[in-house]
Amino acid sequence: MRIAQVANFVAPTSGGIRTTLRHLAAGYVAAGHEVVRVLPARRDGVRHADGVTTLMVRSPLVLGTSYRMITEPWRVAAMLDEAEPTHLEVHDRTTLRRLGRWARRRDVHSLVVSHERVDRLLGAKTPCSLRGVLPVRAAADVSNRGLASGYDTVVTTTAWAAAEFRRIGAENLRQVPLGVDLDRFGAQTADRSLRRAFARDSDVLLVSIGRMDPEKRVDIAIDALAELVRRKIPARLVLAGDGNGRKELERRAAGLPVVFLGFVADRARLSSLLASADVALAPGPVETFGLAALEAMASATPVVVHHGSALAELVDPRCGRIAAGCGYGFADAVEEVLSLDPADRRLAARARAEMFPWSATVDGFLSVHGLPAMPRPATRLSLPTDAVNAAGTRSGGGTDLPRAA
Image 1: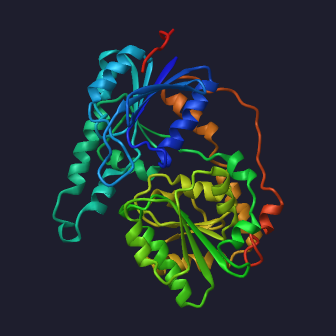
Image 2: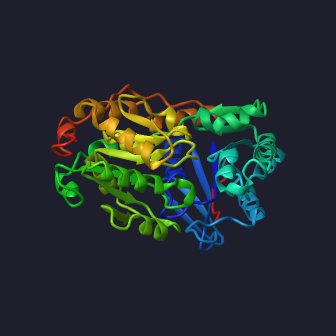
Image 3: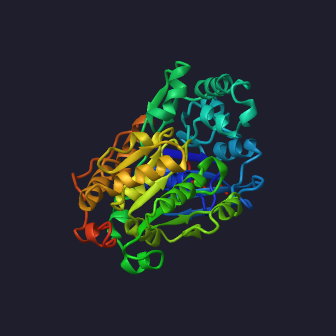
């Protein structure tokens, strides 16, 4: 079969959607299917790599971001006409949402992945003075009804993300959790030299990975550090990521032991950073899954997550805490995590992450497409022994395609 993946908001420094597309495509190819991707880019082009053909569509930048958005969806439809996929997978609900109609006219199986929870996202972007006045939920319901009616299946990654579709009675809803690269994020153990670049062995090292845009609420992580410092806890915070909110965050962090790394492209370095931290912070309130937090747990690092996000579904009391969405609440939660046995909390974090392999995600999406899963031998990854105690003394831690068959 030939599966077409179409998406917006994929950039060299983007995270979740790009990672998801990559792992799904690799799984589809391994299962014997062809994969065609259509993505926004600076200029038109075609790229072939790892069994995947990527068709790049000239698209403008979204103001204030590094993301590009396809503004001529009819060009995508023309590319799909040429590619003749048997299955369509859309990872966008903006300019590409009507591609479900294209699929229906051509009897192509279609699914759309909702990577955002619209009611919460609209609520977060609504000025405080207008909250409770603007019909946010009603607007989200209208958008979601239109999306669900246009595709064979709507896929969400968590129950939290699915809630707004259940509210409107969508009957074509499926839930498939995303995954984590257990090999990459399990192979890297804590690096003492990397840790010492940011903190002393006696310090609490906190890390937060994510885009520095307002809806990610990185300010909560900075406020949590400020509260811990006020409590005389020797804590330091490393922020990995970039975005249009960085300058404001740097002003907020002035005088505090905060390091801004910017976007970290080296995944091995990112894994070592996560493994070297005592606690990872995930303060975003509108996360529909939270790959960065799962990568932290795969690196044997416990997490503190925002109570209002889908991440509350991923965390249990052995490997982290669910915190109130403020600096004080996150500081309390960090202290609670630090009170757990260092080896136990690291082992529990890794064990929780092992419940989310990408292979299960690929099988789930293949099932939604109506395609069989690939048989795999049963394997279990374990936490390297030295990862428990290596983190420091305090914690231990174009379209020239063949025709489809």
